[in-house]
Length: 282
Length: 282
Image 1 (tube, rainbow over the protein chains, first blue to last red):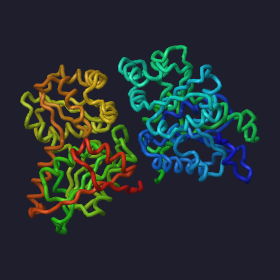
Image 2 (image 1 turned 30 degrees about the vertical axis):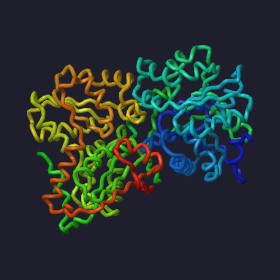
Image 3 (image 1 turned 60 degrees about the vertical axis):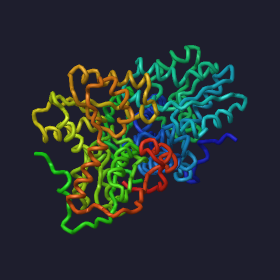
Image 4 (image 1 turned 180 degrees about the vertical axis):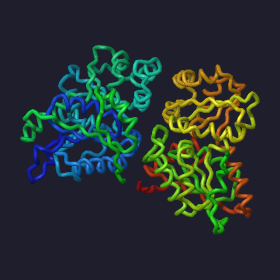
């Protein structure tokens, strides 16, 4: 039942290793994913798209999120990417199949690598998942985790205020702590030993989430697992750049570039030199 | 200096009183405004548009919000409205002039009626304004209030978490109370005697805001002032329907209709019978 997220989109025509790795998210959150990809693959050009004019995706319908995801993917393909990473959990849970139908390059979302990691680290086979309302409603994590291990019991809880709290910068904060207690109390009493942070914003609240859940609960976020998956897959497909070279990182946003460059630095860990505006018609 | 928001957009060709009143907001918030318009003008047809696929507007750039506002207005004009109400404070503060340039019907935003009301009720001439980041950054309330009374001192504070808290339904809630204390402490100590709720979501948090500010502070929201302004202006322009008739209320949204109908009922105060989806290309 487990879908092979990557090979399914592979085209018949050969893809050039000279293309870029494309990554999109609704906003800055996916930069935490790009950060790990950039670290793991030092010679690859990367193109990042943040759909900041239409963010957030987390409370929107599957149809709308899918429409946005397809447009984002089409833009990145037209910009010359050889591999596409859907770094937004909401978009990956809602529209990965639709995106795959529209683009002729290999593609992966953040769900499967996280599910694989959670399945392998859980010892008591009780895994918690937190995400946006749309991600949780989709049931995508349950399906992906059960694809790796049907015996795992999955408890999924939406945490809609975590994104605005992270964007407000209230990372280690009393209000955030209370909100976390309210959202996570059920998961903590259920005794999950692993918690999937199913939204690219949530790693910014890791400290508070860890305190609330207890430090014996393993927190799984998407950045490292997906970077590993991208590296492995490009390697298997013969699409890796191996020669040392200066690579190019290009950032596109659908809203204002200035505030994205400023806020993005905290998520990416270094400065964003080349941020451009793009109009994507939906 | 005060702009006459309404007459400026009046076209040369006569407008028919048989048209509808058009109201738009980024989401459900503007239904609190529509509710008062519907009450004040019982025989008028109304068309409401909630741009739920692209909400929220509050943290986005002036250019993006203006672009969305113009598209929304053009749609409502094409649907046959005789008068346009920009019920979203962020859109009204960012793009009212641009909207006026694009449509040939009279138009008003929520800023001026609130500013007029706040100017007339403040006794100590200290007025507070709360709103989204974009609304506060625009300085639109300061300009509008000073247009009525330049001697009033205006203190404006952005409250970005109020919208997600209201959408989470945490109206009378300990977390909301703490967030309110953090945002409003400065305004309370400054001794404002009037506070403008500069976002259509904020009336849902009125109880907590009133407790935090103290009950001697007058809270001004846009619903009643704008309904009065619409009624007066339509009357002056000879555009009022005076014959008793069954009127039609039509709702359009750019995202899913079902959840809008469900959530909207709390904001409107009665059921939404006719909710339709529309794709607005931006």
